Length: 403
Ligand code: FAD
Image 1 (cartoon, protein in one colour):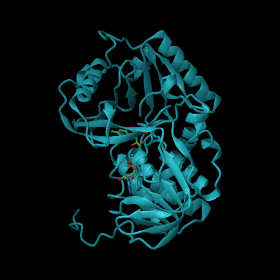
Image 2 (cartoon, helix red, strand yellow; image 1 turned 90 degrees about the horizontal axis):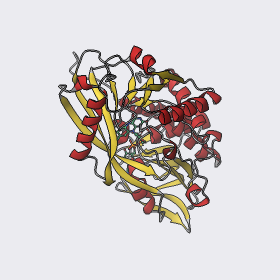
Image 3 (tube, rainbow, N blue to C red; image 1 turned 60 degrees about the vertical axis):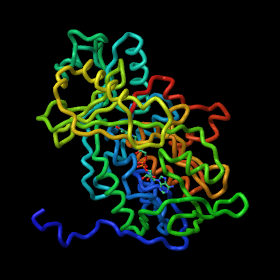
């Protein structure tokens, strides 16, 4: 600050596109950048470009509420998200970058016997996979968060499922850390360059058309999150994905108020507090399909009602800002990391509202797929054709928490 920001060196090069690369990744969010980093670091494939239509991190990577956790139920998901959790635990050393990974605990509240049973099942599934989980009763929750509404609540708090290793990470820093590390390994990060179509020979994809000219590629990987269906349509693919807006909210800065992440189980509301003091919270997706990066008032009201039902003390806190991002909602709530029917074109999509926590493992597994043409073992169920074959990973259907 005292230097007036003079003489600061950019942390990564603003590369101009070359005519050809071994691998082109479309989308400079967390997943695209992580993929490029692991391609270069783990597989030695360094002739790689990440192509981003805006600036890196301007999509969902920079808009999410930063929750990381691995409290999934189903075998198709749990080992993958736990692998991601392990990568989070070593990420700052790996990238030599302060990503502010904070394992402050994620607590999912339950409000009925049936919900308790479902959470007990989820916690047991986690433990079978070697993942930490604790089922708390109401007194256990009260000891952690005495200010939640235990007295007059319409949906009394009966307890919660706690993952102490879950928490938050600074989303922008994750993008910047991967970008700097990938750049240092030779990856070209090309910003303000929109992919507008694909180059092909027969059915094989051989590159991309962009607003800065054609770029040939041995392989093309899509990691465009909320734009997945639109970009894939340019290659003639119709994906099992719908795009919806998800909003997030930040309050004015407050003294320390809530030191973990808490999710309401009787409505859509979840909350944590940033190191700057702002309460960071959100709820459900807007109720209609959209590619707009902004949401509407009915969901704002719904989120505020959820917050008041859980934590009445926030009633007079002032909201500073809110925004929206585009969610690539898959039909079973689980992601896709797979080849596509077009040879040379690979897909990373369907992260719904929970893809930030997946960033390291998504990059790791997508890089593995691109390098070896075979799925990584923890992502082997995340197939594109499962909606046709019936091998769904129906995490949504078994009561998954948002975010
Ligand atoms: P993005 O950052 O969206 O990256 C995709 C990039 O592709 C964008 O930068 C976009 O500009 C670019 N692109 C699109 N089309 C083109 C094109 N034609 N050419 C070139 N580039 C293109 N997840 C969690 O795990 N925990 C949370 O707490 C959480 N909270 C969330 C709260 C909100 C409000 C939102 C919006 C999302 C939340 N998520 C959360 C979800 C998470 O942010 C996403 O699943 C994840 O960021 C998606 O991966 P990404 O970072 O690669 O996406």
